[in-house]
Amino acid sequence: MTDLATLRASSFFDPASHSRWISGLGRIAPLVWLVIVVLFIYAPIVILVGASVDPGKLTATKAFLQFPPKGFTWRWYFSITPTMWQSVWLSVELAGAVSVGAVVIGVPAAWGLVKGGSLGRNLLSTLFRAPLQIPFIVTGVALLQAFNAFADATGYRAQGSLLALFIGHLFVATPYVISATGTALSQLSIRFDEAALSLGASSWRVFIRVTLPLIVPAVFGGALFAFLVSFTDVTLALFLAPPNGTTFPVWVFGSLTNDVEASLPALSCLVFLFSIGAMVLLQRLLGLETVLRAGASKG
Image (cartoon, rainbow, N blue to C red; front, side, top):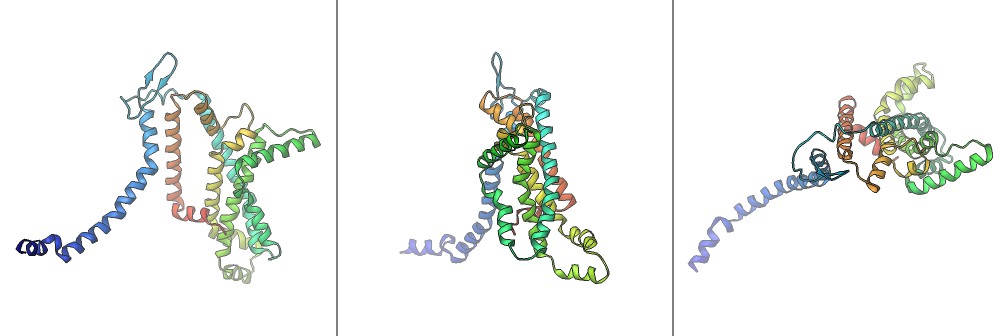
């Protein structure tokens, strides 16, 4: 009985001490969970970086990279061929053109949906977002058949060209701009437009001088998602790209299915660093949280 009373009086059974322990665990648990999630997300990147500087296990014709690295070398970074760089620049140029085209088409379309009459608005909004719901492989087959039908009717064969790939990427990327811009427009107070119109501004000047500056983060957000959709696409490119126009994702896919190039991890690391740099630039210019919030919104 004496020992039991002593244990109950100890700090282990002290309610105040127990409450402090639970409170401390409650403060640490979210931090531990955050660290686990970050490690889960970035563990593949860490493995990629480690493999890119591994000297490799050399054979007669290939080098097999390992993780953890058994040494350190920059060899594979200097072994990136012009063909690899060409695929990266092609993807960047194509994605840039797609993002610009999506903005040119998407912003007026979003303006018409929000500012136009209510008749058919829900139907048009659903149609504009339909490409987001269709699997890319279905879209690729449909576009290929459409280009074949167009070629039979006109004699102009667009399939297997960069133009066809641009149109395919534009088809699946424009809804992101429409959605982001439409959400931003629907949240703007009509008082801004009314105030500018009452001061004698035309509708066009109101849009350029008042509305557009207010929705710039949403437009950039939609353009960013359009760029990413184009840059990371493999499926549409397999259907529509020309034989001499291999984009970076298609080149990676081919390398992984045939024979992995030792320089692939090095080039992938450089692309990753380019992406991080673009994110930092967006953060400095517009605020990345605003851009991503606007781009991810669905009106």
